[in-house]
Structure formats: structure tokens, C-alpha cells
Length: 451
Image (cartoon, rainbow, N blue to C red):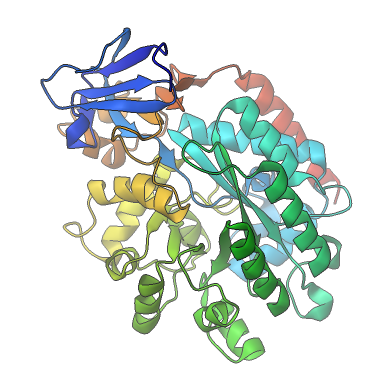
């Protein structure tokens, strides 16, 4: 930050999720330099203002788990109405045909959809690599930089195919040396460190039923050596528990610990089927949980013990998961799903709109190992989501912040990432959305025709 950078006051929002910023925030460069209490004026010099009196102000939402490529297989007929394992085995053969042009379109569509929902940090878990698709992560980095979105990308992998008792076809399985060498290359090429990082890399072997024990162990060692985070699917279904007990003679969390993954460097997707002892162990280790409510419901996987995990000491974040098990990339809608599902698991008095917004912001940031995003405090990144309540669905609402979840907000009016407007009047900046949708639809049709 330099003294000649202009300051912008996001002024007098209709409502704000953080009391200390009820009067708005002052942005300079990529950071928030002042949070304004209700009824107060900035102490900082203000060069320009944005009248936010029609808007509910939130920190930019943070997504913790996704599969961008799956936007090409939404509502795929042969995979409908199936649980996780048969759903996966149906779709693996489709995903094996992905090429780089399709990956680029899928990634752009997913990131744009997330941005439009108020999400400023997008996470992705990509693990499908084949002869026609080897540069998937490079493509995602290029796309994120062009769109100006903050990205937490993970180099996923699968090393155990059907021939060896795994679920994926051999065509998308790689050997351990290739996976580890490529992981190291990507970290060296793209991983940014420190406050304000726009692109970060993590290592993400897909799941216990698609990678070897050796790959899990070596990934943990590489992550520690290079000081990056670890991510995987775990405890998503009872089928997974049975698989681990049959193959490894232990439950999924015991396997995770045995391979050196149980710690605060790790965040897990789903994390549904943990018993009381496992919840306590996860909390003591500080392992994060990416809660994926819509996907869990679509596949009938179960209900995450969000409040129990959080009380034990786990960071709990929110995620849209893949667009073939959701089937959208909308984090605002995911907040509503988390609220409703949480109240089935617990009660309305225990899971409030404030809890869910916390998961989607500070909790998600903690899962990614970030303290510079997810809030509106001075010094944090100027990642902001502003929602207007002008649609029919909000008419008559008394509590503006609760209305975002209860009335079903689905599109932000304005989104700022690192001090730059990336969505204005509900549309992504510098993106021809209609043309993108047309190209994406054609890519999805071509992928289906390839079968």
C-alpha cells in the first residue's frame, strides 16, 4: 500500500454482517484500512464513496471444495438418482474424455458462477488427468488470473484404478512418481505466500478408494517440506467406511492418521461419518471440514456434525462441491441449504443465519489457512459481497441479513476482490456471459457425444 493510492468508502450499507463495520468500510489498494461503526464517519481520508444504502454488506464468501470440470455433466441422465459409488463409476468414464478446451470452459463457468453468487475465493479439487488433459491446474491458474478471482487450487490425483480394486478407470490413473513430480512443479510455478496471495496450491489425493497408501504418505511429506496444505475427501459415506475397514482394517480417520494427515495442515471434504471420539481427535488436531450440504443431500450421504466439529476445535467452512452432485456453483444458495440442513440435524435456535455466514467466511478462510480474508477488519483483504434486496423474494423482509438466507439470495449485485470490482449490477466484469454459456453448453454436448 502506498500513500497515493485512492481510498473508497463503501458507505452506510443497509445492513452488515459485522457490527464493527455497520457504517461500511474504507478500502485502499487491495486492503480494508478502516471499519466504520454505525452512525460514524471515517477517520481516514476518503477520495470517493460508493452508496451502499441499498445493499447488505458481507465479507466475500469463501468456497472450500469444488470440482470445476463437473459443470459439464450437470443432471447427467445415466447418473441420476444414485448414491456416491455407483454415481462415481457412471461418471468416471465420461470425465476420462475431458480435453483442455473443455477444462478451460468448465473452469471459467464455475468461477464466474461463484463470483456472481458473492464468492471471492474459489477452491477447486481437480484429480482427473488423462492423455488429453495434463495441464488442468495450469489452465485454472490462467483462468483465475484473467477473471481476477482469488483461487485455492489443489493438485488432485488418483493412483489406484479398477484393475487394483479402486473405482476409477485405468485411463485416469497416474503413477505416484508422476503425481509427486507434477505436484512439486505446480507449487514452484504458482503457489503464492503471505497476505494477499491470489493463487495458492495444495496437494489433494482424491480419496481412500482411489489412491495408494504410499501416495498419501508421500503427499504428506511433500506438503510439509514445501509448506503447503493437504486436502482430500473423507468420511463421506458409510460405503467408504466399509471399504477402508475391508482394505486397511481401520476406519477412514484412523487411516488418515496412519498416513500422516491428521493435523492443522489438512482440510477434509464432507466429513460426515465421524463418531464422538473421532470428532474430538479432529478438533484436537485442528483439521478443517468443508461442509457440502447440497451434495450430501443429492447423493443421500448424510448430515455433517458441523456444530460438534466446530465446538471440538475444527475450522468448519462451506462448499458447493462438484456441479454434478449439487448441481450448481452458487455459494449464496449453499448458505441457505446449510441453514436448513443444520436445523434438521440440530435445531433452529442452535443453527442461525449468523452461524452459516461465519462458516462461509471466517470458517472457510480458516480451512484454507488464511486470516487475511473472510472478514471486514482493517488490514484484511478488500474482498466484499454486496447484495441488494430488490427482488420479489425479499419483499416484506424485516431482517436484511437473515433475509439473504431465509428468502434465498442467489446473486450478488456487486462483488469486489482485492479492491477491484469484479461483479457490477449482477454481471461479471469483462466477461461476455451469453457467449460463455453458449460455448460451455456446446462443450458439454461434445463430451456426451464422445461416449
